[in-house]
Length: 231
Image (cartoon, rainbow, N blue to C red):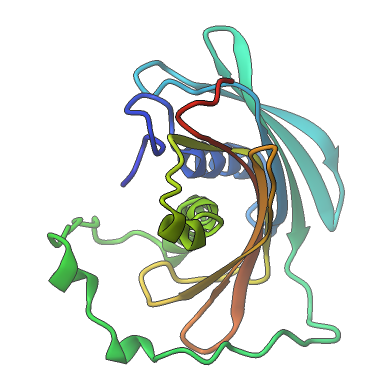
């Protein structure tokens, strides 16, 4: 699991902080409430070699919705903030989504175990199904920051563009399923709407499960540094 971001061996990977903040918020609500919308800002670098404290504030507790604000604090300074909205599971109303993109089936692709050393994790027997579903939710949240940022710059590689540093400024996720599987194949489709001369770039990403149902939609606002740029 990646813990540091591109271009630095100490600055934390944004998806890790995002997922941990979500876990901290969910630990303060009833099990019947599930996260459906998250909005975060990265304020300062988070050093993975130092402890991080997650402070959760109860903004609202309602019967159907509740809201939490999370602050990631390191060395007494707020480095990251997140707002999370939770909702009880309710019957579907009107339902529609974009069609599945025309791409090769996952069955036609190489398995990751053919490309990377296979990692095995032993799971203690007797864990409840709900525990797995909660962990899957955090893994999906973690992954939303993994591929979106780079999608803005891959088309520019042919022009020898390489960012010397790349980090998230604003990261939002909307979850469309309460029960999702992070141990199955999923299609991740990322699009970049603009890459501007101010080094700031906007991206959208979606994850789709093997049954062609949308799992989540993510939005990312990133800052890309060239070697000659300074923060």
